[in-house]
Length: 210
Image 1 (cartoon, rainbow, N blue to C red):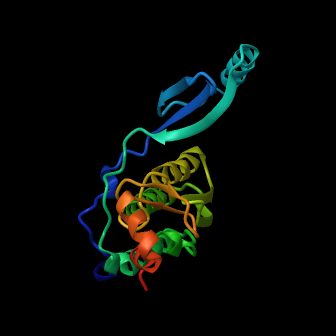
Image 2 (image 1 turned 180 degrees about the vertical axis):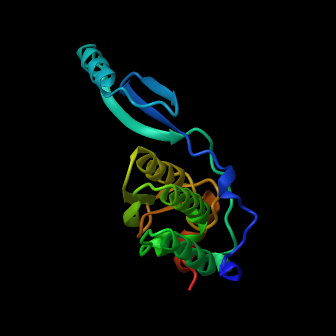
């Protein structure tokens, strides 16, 4: 079995999955904004946010966002596209060995494989510690990852971490990117977006090689 595990130089154990819960309001006509960061690993105070929103709205401020951002950016880059199928198969078998269904792992494009490796390592570790870990669905939607899970708070936070990492990570190369206005919404680097406009199949073959 050990010979079936795909080994890469990326070590998911070294990745910080701490989140910052954030919140903000703005005055778009003035270009003014207020951003609130609850701090690394700290829970959101929803009641405080609601009271602040109520007060600021009386003063002409508008609701802007509620989000979560990683404390540390996952290192840029990705494995070679030729390794994608082998890595996904290895991750799927690791999850299944831990008693976790892994039917949607093919949703991970090449550029998000490091996210998948981090997700898998933590899920397997927590399941082996006795946590209930269940994957309901994994998909990419509007150029970002959606990971729907059943489990405790740290599992829910891991799903948030995966999504937050994906929205700035090119699906083809793992380099810095952002969601693009493409036929199929994708998060792409500037280089890959330029290539997509000339040859979309070339980008798709990098993200989802056959």
